[in-house]
Image 1 (cartoon, helix red, strand yellow):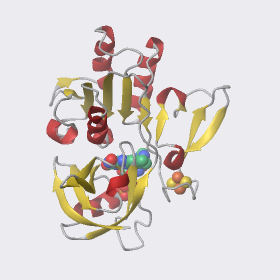
Image 2 (cartoon, rainbow, N blue to C red; image 1 turned 180 degrees about the horizontal axis):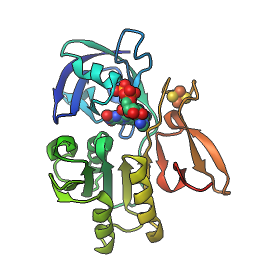
Image 3 (tube, rainbow, N blue to C red; image 1 turned 180 degrees about the vertical axis):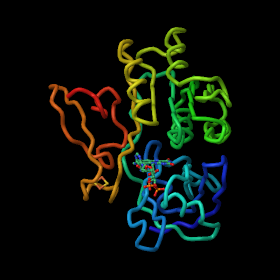
Image 4 (spheres, protein in one colour; image 1 turned 90 degrees about the horizontal axis):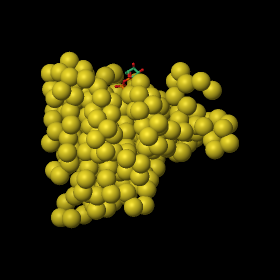
Length: 270
Ligand SMILES: Cc1cc2nc3c(=O)[nH]c(=O)nc-3n(C[C@H](O)[C@H](O)[C@H](O)COP(=O)(O)OP(=O)(O)OC[C@H]3O[C@@H](n4cnc5c(N)ncnc54)[C@H](O)[C@@H]3O)c2cc1C
Ligand code: FES
């Protein structure tokens, strides 16, 4: 499928938001899903690059396109950043599963690290549309160069708590310190909907913090991908099953959202 780039703007020294006109696909896009973007018509990079849907764009109340928020880190994302308004971009999507909000959840905490901020806006907007009013985003970035402005990260009406490793934006420290305070203050309890996206080290720290309190979370995982739709078997991850055994799952079709506590993460005992 081809979309037309409506906007491609830089929001930090390393982060961009691309808005794509895609009226056929946009009405089907849901929070937590991703698109696989063609970054070049040349052979290199050959593989499309998966990007979380950051927002669905509406025109006169009808979904007409989508945005992705991305960090420029290698050849694919460099190509994305060089694309201009009016250019066509090939994509496959929407791909992957969507949110599993527990029935009766009245409160939500979203935990994002680094470019894991990508899917947060559409997740928060979706929760608001479901009637959840008490939404807190805990967002950690490396430094001010990597910290996405709050207005780009989350919709109005969310409480946003920001930290950076060096204290250049928000408070100095890690998201887990803020999440620990929410738990201690009774502002995060079992039954709340927790969504998290970020590096594996953050997943492990968040899991180890939530598990003793019986708080579950949904994790947006990121594995290297080929096809994006279950054909190449290029995106396996390990998941602990109810009987204790470990099964391989595909990030692209079985996820990319999984219950955090079921994931066998790098370095975990098996
Ligand atoms: C489901 C999904 C959703 C994603 N959503 C976003 C998003 O919203 N915004 C965003 O900026 N990025 C997102 N990513 C990651 C993004 O796809 C990669 O950053 C991108 O493919 C890098 O391409 P590149 O050619 O620029 O860099 P490459 O040369 O491919 O990679 C540059 C560096 O990044 C590392 N890297 C690349 N891809 C991954 C990956 N999937 N997991 C871990 N490390 C990786 C490589 O090891 C290398 O060190 C997502 C990935 C997945 C699987
Ligand atoms: S990317 Fe091909 S199977 Fe998941």
